[in-house]
Length: 319
Image (cartoon, rainbow, N blue to C red):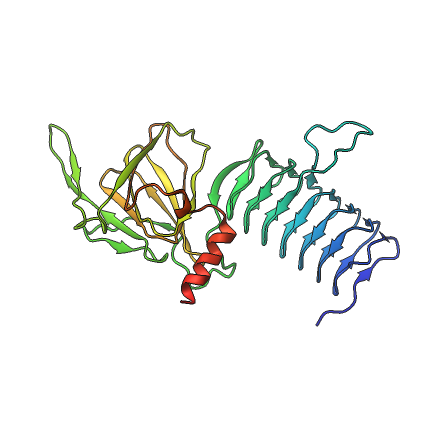
């Protein structure tokens, strides 16, 4: 049961928009325009400017300054001494007409001492490591560390309790039959391989081995190791991915469960149906990723925002 906000006697809180159950501790300054939700915990020696919006159940540890233009969604954790910025070219006594907006999405966590450059977003459920310098937006559920911050992995499941979720890093079955991964209708497909002293051969037949007849293909190669591709879902289009040289990791997400698969052989493929969020990363320097698509290119078929993807999944499940 929530109560009225607790404000320590040493805090200077000018805002009247403070949610119930919120605690504001020693020597915190909150300017008049700031909006703070319910059950927020703001530790000592923090500063919050006017054009700041903080959602519910947010934790802000000591020594954090939240500047104009910052949006913090529900259930975010901000570690001690995290540095936010809102002006790419700051000059003393020169104020821009509008500060860049930085958006920390629901459930994200930012480790102590991290630096977040202006105008970026930290995606839903993402984790930024301590001391990281974030120079580009962090995708949903990504784990980013270092300076500049690079993605090293993805959070294993949307459910913090880890209940009723598949093994995050899946392996290909040893038998030759396809198998469901446990993420929507995503499936793993061991493909035929003929080994020969003259050279190996792998093949598949449509739609016998791959569950659709393709209308196009594309090839991804020369991807810098630290880069991430994909980060979208399709409304209608189906895809089948094979890494024909080198290796790369594929993360698939149905809005509830998530799994990561390492593609490292031309006789291993992954089928990705519509309404599955897909990410490809950890490309080896020599990686060549071949993708078959069930439909011609249509920009309107892409869902590029994760929140929009979740809405589409919910709408589809309610039909």
